[in-house]
Length: 149
Image 1 (cartoon, rainbow, N blue to C red):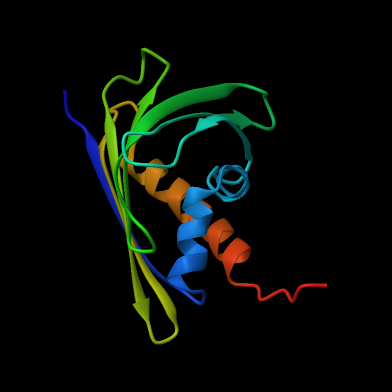
Image 2: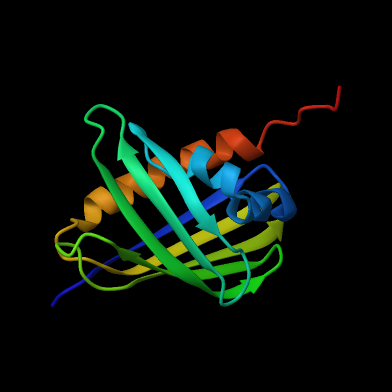
C-alpha cells in the first residue's frame, strides 16, 4: 500500500513558546487545526509522551465528520512535537506520523512540519492544501499581541 507525505515550512512572527502552546492546548487545537470549512471537537488530549488524543473534524456544510486519534511519541518543550494519527474510518487505513519542529529565529519561530504515511485515499496535494489553511489559522491565532485588560 503506497502512502503520501507532505512537508511544510513557515516563519511565524511569534515566540516558540506561543507557537508550542497552540499545539499543546486542546482549545487552541480546535481553533486552528481543522482546515477552512471544518470545525473540530477534541474528545481527549493528554499532551505528554505516551499520552493519547482523540478528535473529530466535522464538515460544516454537510455535518459529516472524520474522527481520529493517536499518541504523542516525542515532545520537547518549545522545540518538537511528534505524534501518530489513525482514522477511525476503515477506508482510511494506516498510521500517520507527524513531526513538528520549532526553532527560535530573529523575527519569531521557524516551523517545519513533516507528515508521513498519509493514506493513499487522501491525495497528497489535498493534505498539503489543508495544512496550508491550518497554518494560516495558526498564524492568526499566535501572531496578535493582545494586552491584558
